[in-house]
Amino acid sequence: MLETERLVIREMCPDDVDDIYSVYEGNDLSYMEGLYEDKDKEREYIKDYQKYIYNFYDFGIWLFEEKATGQIIGRGGVEHKVYDDGTEGLELGYIIRRDKQRQGYAYEGLSAIIIYVREHFEANNIKVSVHRDNVPSIELAKKLGTEFASGQTTEYITGNIKFVE
Image (cartoon, rainbow, N blue to C red; front, side):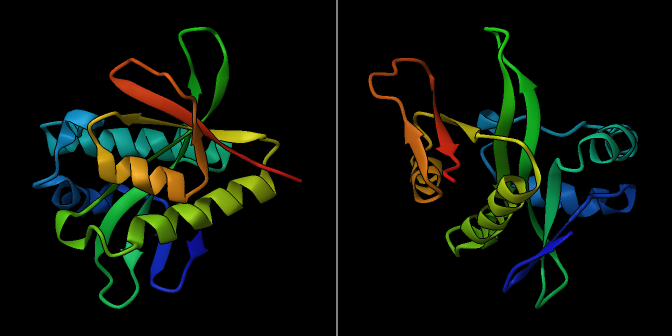
């Protein structure tokens, strides 16, 4: 799908399930949607994701595969969301395997994905929602160009990566 200096960014498939579970091990999952406890259910979810998300939108949550080792070290991408207020948009999400965090992989992969979305889709921005206690993700979001609205008092703070022409 996409390549960076250190990563191949590609669609996930059912054969990746064990690697995906290893990405989640040791991470604080209170900030994100988890995986099914049953790996067979996760495989079915991935089959449906391939069929209904990748094929329909041409984007989604992809895997980050480290070129040097061939290991799956994370997931990241954008998904179409419908919000409580009825608005719709693209939202950024990611997770990096614990032993690969703070090495620039998330920034590298997400930067490539943001460029891809900006160049291939009619979107003005990508929404970012981060738990206010997740300081590393807030710092990453800002580095990616997220502008957070001031004065937010909810558990999650939101912002936008705006595309400029």
